[in-house]
Amino acid sequence: METEPERGARDRVERSVGRGASAPHASVHAGRRLAALVWLASGLVAGCADPPPADSPRPGAIAFGVYGDGPYYPWEEPRARRMLLDAQSAGVDFLIHIGDILGGSCADEKLQDIRGQLDDVPVPVVYTPGDNEWADCHAPSAGGYDPLDRLAMLRRVFFDDPSSSLGAVPMPVASQAKDAGFDEFPENQRWTLGSFVFATIHVVGSFDATAQFPERDQRHDQEVARRSEAALAWMDGAFDEARATGASGIVLAAHANVRLESAGGDGYGPFVNALRDHATAFPGNVLFIHGDTHTFRMDQPLTDEKGRALASFTRVETYGSPDIGWVRIVVDTVKGEVVDVEPRLMKRWF
Image (tube, rainbow, N blue to C red):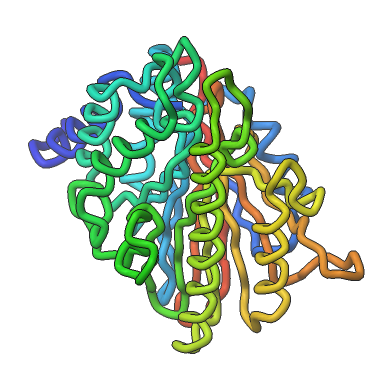
C-alpha cells in the first residue's frame, strides 16, 4: 500500500508534468564500449517495459539526470510522469533540463505554467533554454511572437533568482548575471560538487537562433552575437575555475547539437573551436551534454587539430519526443571520473 509520504511525492511529480508539459540498463565507463551501449539502448526503444530500478551510486560518487525535448503532446505526458518518478526513485542529486520545455504555444501563461511544473519536481532542476521556448516562437503555430520578446519573458519567468536552481528543493548556483558586463544572462549557471565543475551554457538549436523568418531584423542578429560572446566567456570561466580549484572534471550542458562531427557547422564553429581548445588543454575529463536532435547517443566526436579523437572528451545527448526518457549519469567526485552513463527510456505502450 502506498504510504502518505510516498503518495505526496508521487503527486508532486505528477503535478510537475501533468498540466500539458513541454518538448535499459547499461553501465558504461566513459569512453569505452560505446558501440555496445548504443546498440543496447536502440534495441530497448521498442521494448515493452520501463527500465529496472537503478543501482545506488558507489561511495564517493553522485548521480544526476539529464532530460528535455518533450513531452510535446498530451499522449506523451503519462511517460513524462513515469520518467520523473523514475528519476526520483533513482536517487539523483539534481536534474539538468536541456531545454525545449514546450512544443506549441509560447504564451505567457504557458511559460508560467511550466515554471510551476519545474518548481514541483522534488529535486533541484537546473534549466538551460532551448529554441522552442523563444527562438522559434515566431512560427504561427507558436503564436507568432517576436523571439526577443519571448526571450525577455523567459528570463523573467525562469531566472527571477539567478542564484538558485529550480525545483522544490533548489540548490545554490553561480550565475553569469553577477559578472561585470554580462548581467543580462542569468540563465548561464555554474556549480561545483567534489572535483567536478558543472555549467549550463545558453546555445540553442535553429542554428543558434539564426534561422530566417519574415520579421527578422538587425536586432535579432545582434542578440545572437551578444549571446555567443557570453557563451564563450562563460565557457572560459568554467575552465578557469576548474583549473584554479584543481578540479579533475568538467560537465557542460547546452541545448544545441553543435555539430561536433562537422567542426561546428551551421554556425556553431566558434563554440566548437573554443570547446576543442579547452578540452585539449584541460588535464581532466570533459563531458558535454546536449539535446536538440532527439537521439540518445554517447560518443567521442571531438578531434584535435590532427583529426585524432580526444580521449578525455565525451558527448552525451538525451532523448527527445517521441521518445520520452532521461539519462542517468554517475560521476566519482573524488577521482573526477565518469563512472556510469545509463539511458532510461520510458516504454510507449502499457
